[in-house]
Length: 286
Image (cartoon, rainbow, N blue to C red; front, side, top):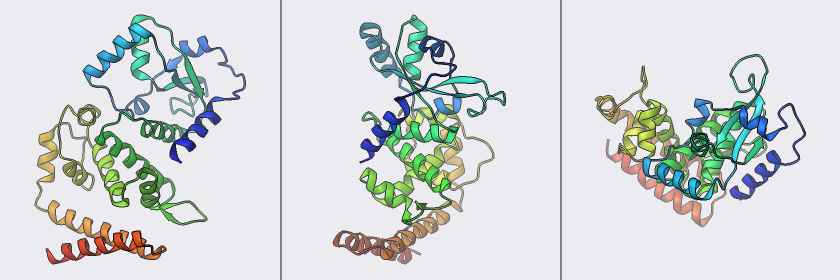
């Protein structure tokens, strides 16, 4: 269902485009810009992957088109002149290689009404790919959970049917709602790291326990953290463990209430029993 919806969105955004001030493909290519907040949404390639991509492009050319957001500088948050601009939103590595060797490439043009809509599209696009690592998948699911919960004013999804955001996303991605919430913590924790530090974790270059990053999401930081030592020093605070335990109980209680309000099936009852057992164990541990 998710893939079908995504493909429909692609078709809607890339077909039947009317001529504009930037109707010439070559003109668009000459004006492509890169925005760091959008580029940094995409997990970088490790050096071996980047080298392999470069060799494949040199041998076979660029097979997949680059995706360009055609908008204005005002909508993109660049300035208030409302000047037409073309922002690269997919294909940053391919674009760099083409620039380096002066190679030609094709483009897909998409149009969105806001930066937020563009980010949602990019997150969905990344989740539709098959080569994401478990950490990268968790990060993008977490971003989607955070954004949808924020845009809808809480952990609710839709207007007519009040469906829990975490449960809706859990069903879509075939995981538990608790996993989705932890993905949200993981994404939130990563946002407290410097861009370079975050990239090293998402590419697997540095190994930092996911539980540590999830704990980090609940802590206050004055500046972005740039090293593993800074993260471990912060989460070593004596108050962290008690706060983490209380937060886990809150999540368990919330999921128990959510399932109890819905229709009781064999699957939901089994899940409810398991959650109740976990909740009782957390109480006994106090």
